[in-house]
Image 1 (spheres, rainbow, N blue to C red):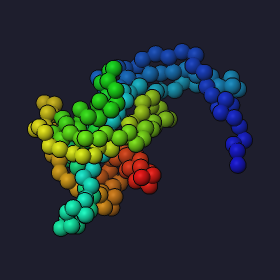
Image 2 (image 1 turned 180 degrees about the vertical axis):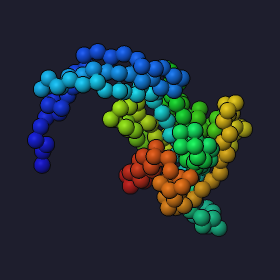
Image 3 (image 1 turned 90 degrees about the horizontal axis):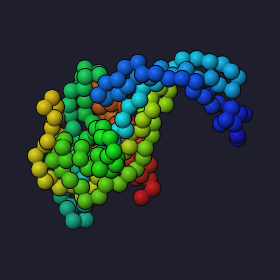
Length: 198
């Protein structure tokens, strides 16, 4: 089954744009655009930096550690989020600095928030979190072979705690209460896709 219209039929062209406001974490742009039928409109676009989310995975080795029956575990962080004005449990995550490669940002965020490094950082997905008005992508990485190498390196206004959480518990709770961060749901979907493709 194919779509009734081609991709080009849906395109809009930009006539002009201007910044409404610039902040350290995003800019708001007012863009005047026109479509193929000459319909014109003003649209507000959020220019945001790229994001990274790291899924630190402790894989249970039942063959070499039969006493450990808890199953695989994620290393999760817990912190206050100012947008929702609530505490959330999520994966280590953050902004990609200008000129920084997303994989380097993933390594940096994991170490800063937890003090852990990984033997392997695997890119498992990248998606636009809200294409209706956002320009950026959130990149998800899987971290394996974890080792504690340092203490946390938090910003002055950050307070982040971390601990292992069974994978089954995260899937059971995600989307509810403290597990209500939407980007975490995106990351879990990529994790499931990676798991099926192993």
